[in-house]
Image (tube, rainbow, N blue to C red; front, side, top):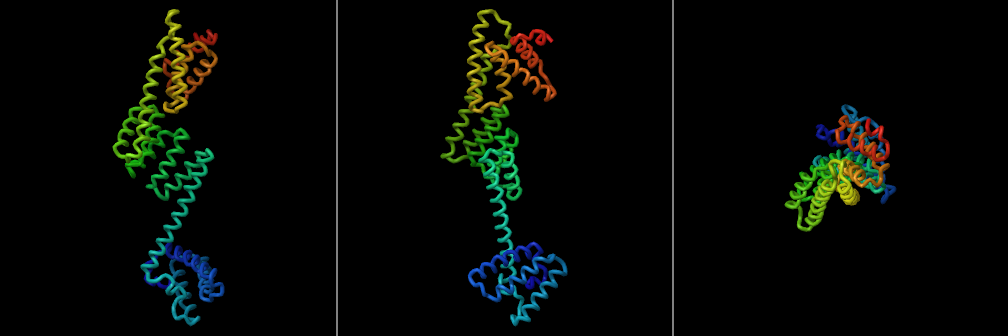
Length: 329
């Protein structure tokens, strides 16, 4: 402070330098417990840090520090020589700020990692978001938050984080893999395939295998989904022979849907209506079909738009479970 007669250091620099000086003086006293100069300067620093830094108070404090040094026979401020010239002081302040920022960033990252490991994905997302406010360009943090959002079924948010990571680091393989999965789970298979193909042009040779595996999985999932749709009938008003064939195809559709759900490659919003149709086609689990039809109807109502086919399959589910009056209604 005494060196800064012209106000070239701002108040934040002053505070950072003081905190750094306190740490250094403590280190001196560990090795030299009886060092009188270190004790005197540490006492003075602690006292000055309790006061408000700004305006005339800083200037008066600087004068007191200089006067105290003269009374002790030092002739200069007790801070003299501690940091070197003013440029060195500013660099030291900047370094101290960067260290504090790095420590805070690492603390929030570790908190997010810990929460993610125990399955607390909401807390993990919050910690990663706080860390990203400190370093918005940290691709590792963006990927971590994308993973948490994927588990929270915030697929749009996951894709957004992966897109940002790709913009910052175009060869980041995990960003393409997670981004593609988030698109698949929104039912956007074309977008997922396009993103993975773009990634194959950017990532290193060693990372291509992961993207190729994801791309094959996405294409296989889309193929399975189309097969399921091919097995399912648009109507169940069938002849006896057609009905037997439909039941067999319904079982095949059911098995494919089980595999898709296991792989988590297709969003439940797409598989559950197909599963209802498969259940109705097999005629094997009428109670389960009725329950699923009720859930889908509630979901459609909550979205504000109930399509005609939802009512149709709901009616068939009720009829199949023996509730003919409700089915007619």
